[in-house]
View (spheres, rainbow, N blue to C red):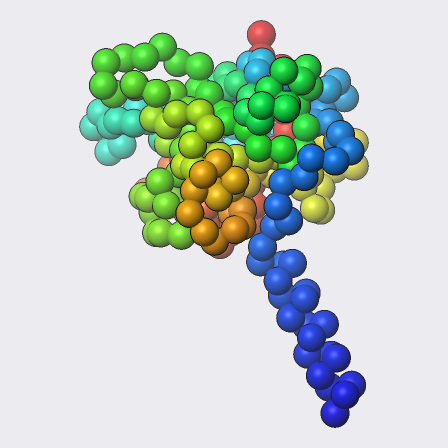
Length: 217
């Protein structure tokens, strides 16, 4: 009987770690690296895309859906593998970290589209997720957020099973609680969600989106 109870407890621990991420850390520095092996700069422009580009291009913004102008913009994957996508700024936002030179894994950050403000449509340019526990479109990544706010709270973490051992690859997590959001205290994996042929970045039950950093020119 005691053995059965211990086995069940071990199963519960495995289940918890498989479904919830560990909270952001502030210990040893684990830097983020780009495809050339250089450290990724904090608050500097980078493109992100898949490890194997034959599976699609880089991440970009789209202003249209079904040929209609939309606002705010969706964050999507370019279908053409030859396209590197847009340029985005990954910015550490903690008061103790915002002046760091390099990006670090498992540290809270905001992602700025870097686009000029355009009236009410693009009042704010940070990536956001309205409700990570809802179904699309509320769980899709869009622009229109403000830095250091629950909907715009993300972290970059090492991809658990990298496709290639030759490059550093990562996944993105949405962590609203750590920027003033309401419980639950957890982070949500960001995956690709396909809607009528368009691959959106979104919180979903799919495989987390594995990506690499490439310094933008």
